Amino acid sequence: QKEVEQDPGPLSVPEGAIVSLNCTYSNSAFQYFMWYRQYSRKGPELLMYTYSSGNKEDGRFTAQVDKSSKYISLFIRDSQPSDSATYLCAMSSYYGGATNKLIFGTGTLLAVQP
Amino acid sequence: DAMVIQNPRYQVTQFGKPVTLSCSQTLNHNVMYWYQQKSSQAPKLLFHYYDKDFNNEADTPDNFQSRRPNTSFCFLDIRSPGLGDAAMYLCATSRPQVAKNIQYFGAGTRLSVL
Image (cartoon, rainbow over all chains, first blue to last red; front, side, top):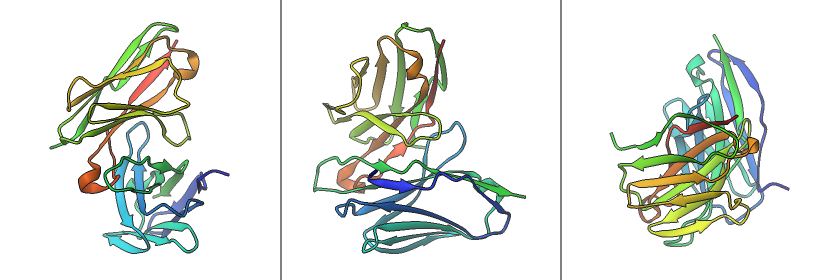
């Protein structure tokens, strides 16, 4: 079993739709949760960062973490064609001063149709 | 703007011909990472430098080496590229003492092996 599971898609939605992207994980030590957006042939760009459980909102984007269920989500409201990209979830634990690896999902390919 | 810069963006090499990819950063981050990403897959960590300390992943082939001559620069050397080494190579940086394990990525170098 992979530490992080993410549906690869592709997910195709019409412009203006609400998009829900999800990841599940198995390691209860994970405390830091990130969503990266990766456009075709580009590097990942940090979109959202959340510590522990709860919600975080930034414009049209909302990140949710449910540590009891080991489940994280990214919601995109009023989706735009420019949101078409691969969305990677990533997570890590952290032990004061040490470097800990990011564990990535495989990414979900999103296409927003105009 | 502070950023992570990778050169070249595209690199074509011949089977077995050594190649070097470069990464520079103006973020003054003390940790630098090299990832390999193949199509529709999660980035795979090859190694990282924490300051001057080199940390190799257990499953990184000996064919891959790295150098970090100073804080700002890091190089990935592939001694004898094989067809299976064709991939996107991503450089990332972080400063765990300040921003836990958030990593900032460059745009990547796409390597083709003929």
